[in-house]
Amino acid sequence: MQSINLRAPLLNLEGTARVRQANAQVGNAEATFVARKAELVDRLAVAYLQRMLAEDAFLSLHAQVHATVAQRNLMRRRFEQGEGTRTEVAEARANLSLTLVQWADSKNQMMSARDTLEAMTGVPQPLVVRLEDEFSPPPLVPAGLQEWQDKAVSANPDVQAKRYLVEAADALVARSNAGHMPRLDLVASVSNSRNESISSLNQSVNQSAIGLQLNIPIYSGGAVKAAVTQALAEKTKAEAEWLNEKRNLEVEVSRLYQIIQTGSSKLLAYEDVLDASRVALEGTLKGQASGLRTNADVLEAVRKVFQAQRDLAQARYDHIFQRLRLFNKAGVPADSVVSYIDELLSPNRGTP
Image (cartoon, rainbow, N blue to C red; front, side):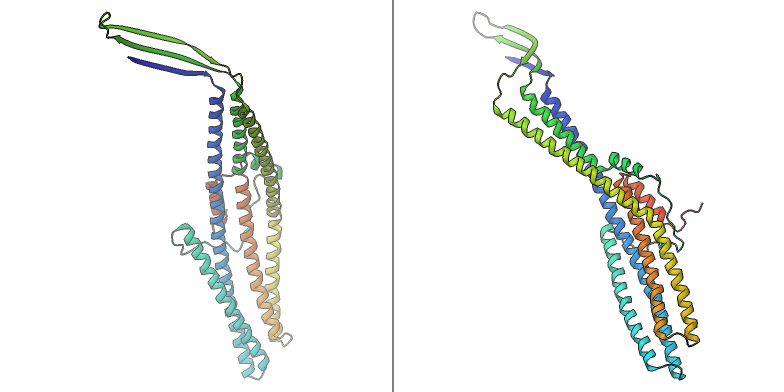
């Protein structure tokens, strides 16, 4: 006897809910992958910018060492000519020793930052580009905070992942409720049998049947009701987490936006501090030549100049990193974020 049986669902609410749940889970996985990619870009940018900052700090301290050596040599000549004192010579030597210690620490930090970047990328990084002295960040596009928040809520991968979890939970509720719903199937069968008895030797019988099969559950026990209750609780939890993620995102986008908006004026203030410290150093050197300023005043003025340089570099790199964070939070694709930051760091930025 040979037979073929076919069953095709016409109304299967549980199966439909399973498909919805599976699609939502796929969407959640894809959004999570995009979020992890953005985190990788974030970590890579931190490592790259820290290396740039470490090299800037090292070069600044290197120049400070040369300035301190020149000041020590000047104090020695003045002492030999009877114009200086042992105290000034000792003071200059002590300041040089301190600067050399800071220079050595800065070199170690630079090498550590370089090793961190190489370990992350897996390829040697012999050189990194340095920011221009006239670096000035462009205005944000779009310019409004609400536009950034709306963009973040609609495109942020973490929010999207939470939204897919809500969809999956809603599909689970429908899937659990399907235990109370009827099911309609199309059924068909074809069979062929051959009789081998003496009275019906070599006779065969072919049978075909097609029809509809309706299953109506009358009582499914307490398991279905409990599953529905649990699914509703999971949906409520997923909705609360989604809402919380959106609110936290709006707060973070607002914070980053305000930091960036005030960043330009902050950079201008640091540039003014650097210019003022250079003018003060020049005046202190002239005052020392005329006998109105001491060696200690000159050394302090030198320290303030190079400290202002390092503070300005730190502020610039922080500003660039905050822009990167804002773009990531707004759901801008990782490749576009990398291209934007690369353009900011380019020494030919703004040139045709």
